[in-house]
Length: 377
Image (cartoon, rainbow, N blue to C red; front, side, top):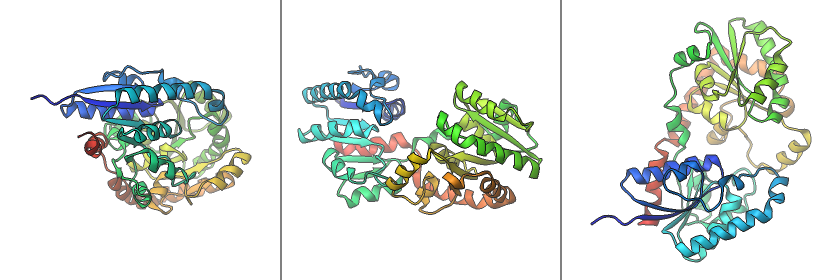
């Protein structure tokens, strides 16, 4: 007798969530399950049979002002999605990231008897810790990407499990460092320092001038270095090139290819963000830097509860990679920290990265469907 279809409600509110949802759904399909999907998603979930109730990009809003401008539309979409799910009554509703949109939906559905789970923990360990009360009322299970998050939920009486991070599996598919150097036109006989100033205009504007000063001084001290900067878009490339135009430096600017740049590099100077996790998983010694507008820093520094901002340091619970924030993110400090790594201190970082990567683990999609098995039968 054939297994009945697995009826799933999904809500992925942005491209990254759609990719995660697609990976999990595809793992179920590869395990032999037929899927009946409803909810909201993008191209990855559409390829697996989801007819999205609303365009996913209508949910992908950021900042403080933009969501307020779009609030009536967002509330209307949320009401439609809740009504759809209450009518269809799936075996499981899975909200993927976008917690401000998804958690109220999950709470309403769970109260009606629909099993609910949420994939990607909100950063309750960093700020807005009171959200954990709302989460307890909203989900039957929380799927966490990092192991340290699980205990926080269990202490609050929430069933949680670490399913690993999809980057662990994705980064294994990259070509070798030597092959990428050849692709990017980087010298094979030089020490490569990767410079990653971030993907946003404000990040490049705040960080890159100090990075340029750092590159200039490092070039004077270590003429064997070659520098490479990945630009996340054509606009960012023009912005970066304009800041470099007055200096004759051994530097290559590439469009995109951020992960490839990290793989090809020996040492990294990187803006705080997901790139620090990628660098850790690629076992690349790094110096982490970040600058934002002073007014924003005054607010954010009061909100954040963690002593560290870089994901490797948060995972380790200590500073395994140097963090230079705000006024400390200056050329003098950066030069010093990079020189320490170049003098072979990077090996100690890499040994820590091995341990941290092992704690996270791979097989994200397989672990996710295993964690959800008890909810769907």
